[in-house]
Image (cartoon, rainbow, N blue to C red; front, top):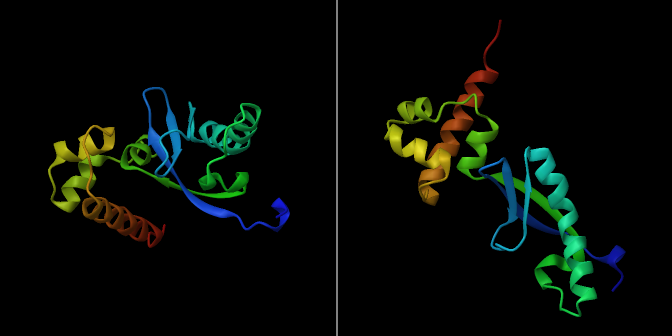
Length: 141
C-alpha cells in the first residue's frame, strides 16, 4: 500500500509540565517523547519524531511499531493538569479548587503533576474550567 493511500491514524499527544518546560508524548507510549521550553517548541520537535524514529529503525534493521502507522499520524493535543496549569499560569489552581469545593493543597499537587488524578476528578476539573470559559464568553464591556 502506498503511503498516500493510507488513512491517517489519530493519536492523542499529551502535553505535560517538565522541570524546564514541556514534554509531549503519545498516549500509551512512554518512548515517544519530545521536550521544549515552550509548547510550540515541544510540538515542533514532536511532529518530527515519527519520521525520525522510523528512519533510525530502518537504518538499524529494526521493525517499525504498527502504532506509528508508517508515520502517517494526526495528533490530537491534550493537556494533563500539570501541562494545563503551566501553560495557562495565570489561572489559579487554588481558586478553581475553592470554586469546586475541593482541597486546595491537593489541587496544587495536581497542578504540579506530583499526585495522580483519577479520571472522574479530571473530568470534574475540566468541566469547571469549561464553565469558567462560558462565563467569560458571556462578559460584555
